[in-house]
Amino acid sequence: VDILRTYMKGMDLDTTNWSLCYPDPCPQQGSGDDYVLFTCKYMECLARRDTQCFPFTQDDMPSV
Image (cartoon, rainbow, N blue to C red; front, side, top):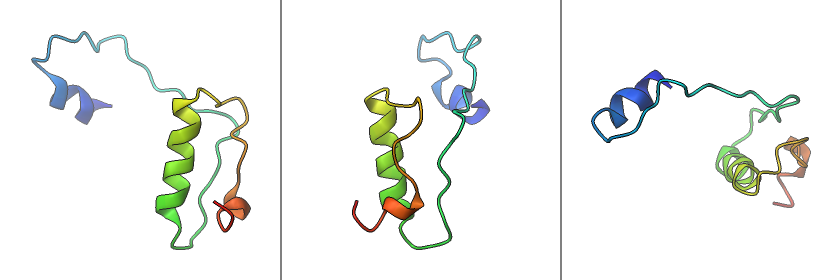
């Protein structure tokens, strides 16, 4: 968040009250090479505001 605040400095945005939110449970990516798919699926859930239980796991990656 600090790096993002530095990057956005001077862009006429007040970031002083921004906070981090850690969903619980948060899906964990395994050690495989599917990190791009995992990240895209995670971002899709965030965009749809479907963060209540993140309806996917590492086991779902082959079908994604």
